[in-house]
Image 1 (tube, helix red, strand yellow):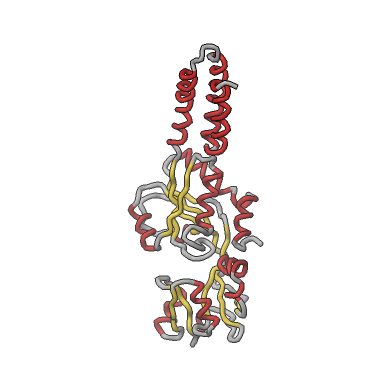
Image 2: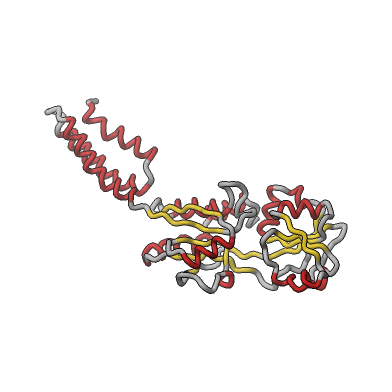
Length: 298
């Protein structure tokens, strides 16, 4: 087979390996048209003309790649299952999932920020962004835009964890009078503020949930709050951390938190396309498979 005849086939095989789906679709027509052209110029040996035609036909595919839009996924949750390492966890899984489901039209990148910095960005920043795992009640009052919200993608509860040697059945702060509470540095526990001020509950902070679980196992604290998603993650991935611990039958919250994704997407077509993907997540087998890897939905 001559060069002019095999060139389009070779390029097609290469593109299948390396090009995203949208670019691949744009490029298919160029490849097959160029193959016909190559055959037609075979007798004259005008290989250069065929190559130039391929370059010209590839330009629309390059334009598709260049027009891919980037969106930041901003989150202040720095604990499992949302963040399990510097580049792993549900927040990173969400970015990859949305990118795949958009067919490469959008590219989502996760950024983990301290809560105060995230709130400051929402108050002053004008860039498009998504904030997952939050509720409308969580939003600060003074922000620079009117947010849009997805449907509920998950429900969560705050569980009360103590040791089996000293189990606590939660009935509000009064039931924990005289106990030592394991908090997270920088977190505000509105329902315990009065007890902290009166000294009826002693606050003993740690940098993260895993550290508090270790303190609880060593009986350096008496109880802590832990989101049920984190409990499920630890039971699935690190069961030793949850051994010999007691989960109160009564939850800290009276009703489940309806976790949604907040959006600031100014283009209406883009917003509708992204919301369509997000709102289908709870019924999507691929997303459910991701949740199961973190012990959720099992």
